[in-house]
Each structure stands twice: as C-alpha cells, then as structure tokens.
Length: 292
Image (cartoon, rainbow, N blue to C red; front, side, top):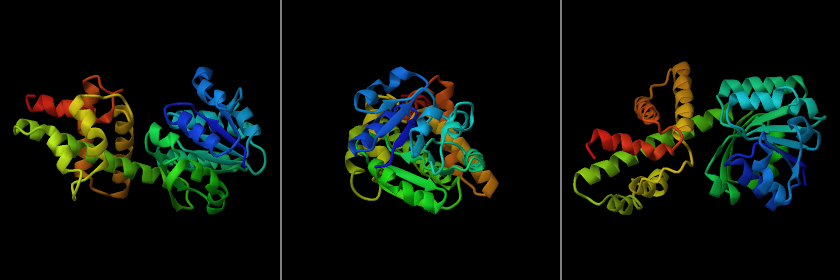
C-alpha cells in the first residue's frame, strides 16, 4: 500500500483520513492545530510536525485545506510539502480553490520535480467517512493512474477531467453552481408553499419522485423546514465558489443569470450575519422578503 500524507484535519479532512485508514493505507497527518488530529491519530494515523515532515514520510501527499492561501503555504511555503518531497512523490490538492491558483501551485510543484493533481470533492463529512465522495481530477494522466487506488478508497465516483491542472477545480465550481441554484429553487418552493397554505412537508413528498427530484430538496429541504442551519457547506464557502464561478464565466463569455441571483441571495445571507451557517439559510432571506 502507498504511504499517504494528509494535510488538513477539518470537517472533511478527518473523515477522509479515516476512510484511508479503513482501506489499509498507512497515513501520516499534519494540521495547524494538533488537537484536531486526535481522532485520526487514535485511529492509527501518525502525527508529523510540519508539512515537509509529512512529505518526507509519504509517497502520495494530500492537501485538504481552507483556501488558496492555505494551499500555497502548506505546499510551496517554508517547511512546506515541496521542501520535504523526495523523488517520485505525487501531490494531490483536494482543496476548493480557483483554477488559476491551482495551476500556479502545480507549476511551483513542477519546478521542484513534483507532479500535482487538483482533485476537489463533492459530498459531506458523513459521505466522506463512508468513502463515497465524488472526486473531480485534473492533471497528468500518469499521475492520476498512480493515485487511482487512493481515490478509490475515498470515492463512489471519480471523474478524470483531463491532463491540464485546474480542470478539476473548474468542474468543482460548475458542480457547486448547480448546487447553489438548486438550493435557491428549493427554498423558493418551500416559501411559496407556506404562503399558499400548503404544508411545506408536502413539497418534500411530491418532489421525491419525478422530474423535480433534487438532492438539494431531499437533503436540505428538511433542514430548511426545521430551520436547522448547522453548517455542512457554509454560506461563506458557497459564496466564495459561486463568486469564482462568475469570474470564470466572465473570462469565458458565458451568461449565468440564475447563478447571478443565487450569488446575490448568498450575499444577503452574509449581510444578515449568517455567513458561517449552512448555505440553505438563504430561506430566511426569502421568508423575510415574503413577510413570513
């Protein structure tokens, strides 16, 4: 089994490491706050003091951190992955960052003789713990083939997008655009039902079959009805990804009117102090506008 290094013990990182350990991979981990790694260390992972130390102990190094600045720091910065990576190490950045940042980090890695894949994920912590994420991968085919067993331990669906770095992160933006718009539509449907005198639960029942069926309604519909906004994918994260998708669209000349409205609703949720709550909290904006 390949020796895996893993950087980032956040909401997604911890269950992803547990899935790798369950599959039999030896895993060395690092996080800025050591306490967050306690669960995975107790499960059999080995702690390392720096990202460079993780890389020195690993054949495949995975980064799953907050944003582009964090990715660049743990990979290219002092005591970063590239300082400790030996010949033949594969680097996988699974963080959700802008495509241009992914390409820049990949170029930095190439200069050090390290091949990188950008491989963001779709799913939640529960799905991650089950090894059933969706993973989108951009980067050299040969590197992807070497890392496929690692992806298979974490994923129910792996989509290889192509040889160029940044393609995986681009597909992630597109995926999240769909999710944002679907949450918006689901929230609007629930608000309309309530205003029209229909139990919003009936919307969940009827949209569980037929062409209106969506994961957004099935998963987040009950949360919106109950006003349970515990973050699974926060407003701030969705706003970040959708803003980046709009910049991508501007560069490509694509017109995204519905996504533009979804972005404004997320902006409204942020202005109400709900940036850290789950993105489905946008229903409260719609309720306020509708007098509910």
